[in-house]
Length: 195
Image 1 (cartoon, helix red, strand yellow):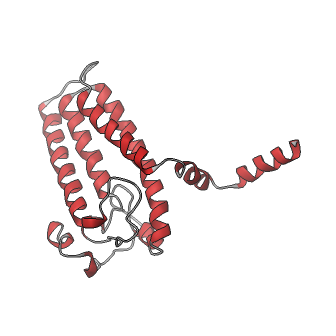
Image 2: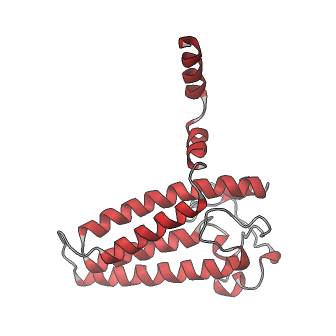
Image 3: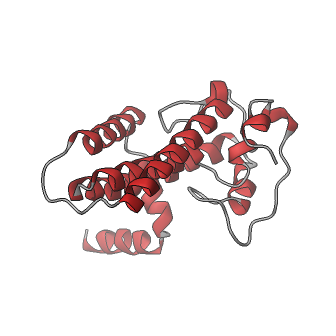
């Protein structure tokens, strides 16, 4: 029995960390991802007590700008997905892979937009607890994107090449190859974010 246990541990140690993380994340049900996401988003808005940091004119202006840009990005990216949009990290199996518009350089612009908008909100309100919860939200989206990307690779074989040339939550700044919009991505992606 001890030999089997040792063999099991050495097999686990030789398994890449990202593979173990993917297996662990696959145990979480799609509805649970949505529930945690909604709870975090609501908590950041509702929690108003505790220590505060000073809100200056510059930080309020920056916060409002981040809020507006983040919301605009998230909404535009959601519209670009069209019928493929879902709050669950389980992609629509019959949906197409959208790689144009806001998805040209970023794989998850909806999440990136939400993260930016909520950071803007935190800067405008000056509540430390909100900043802490925002950090948890960023970590949550990191895990959710890994789960979602594993599912997308199963459905769309071309997703691996897409990963290589784009950033996860922010645009790829180096090493990514420029991508030409796929005309099948539809007109909703073109006018929203012109080239």
